[in-house]
Amino acid sequence: MLVEFLAQFQGTIGICFILAMAWMFSEDRALKPSWRWIAIAVAAQFILAIAIVRIPFIWDVIGLANAGVAAIEEATLAGSSYMF
Image (cartoon, rainbow, N blue to C red; front, side, top):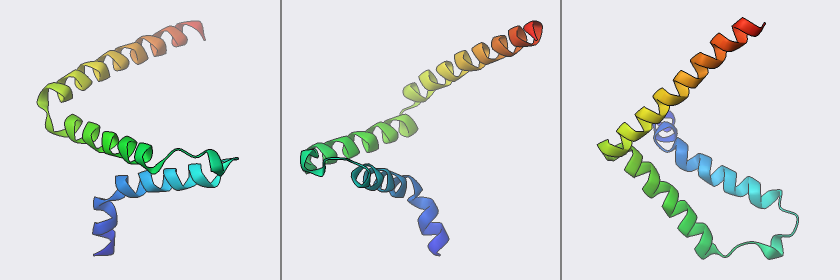
């Protein structure tokens, strides 16, 4: 049951971990951004993730971008095999 819970909230746990690591390794914690800015950034991250997953148009645009990157990768592999 714990594994299922962790798998369901893996992204949320990851965001919290990254925020904690950024705070731990910051040199001057007195100059940290306000909690309001952090909450806005995290909310924007969740809204973007939900939009990517739930809106088909955005999913299609990401699929096209993926196809473009795959074509560049394929051309790069072909070119590098010619060079070396």
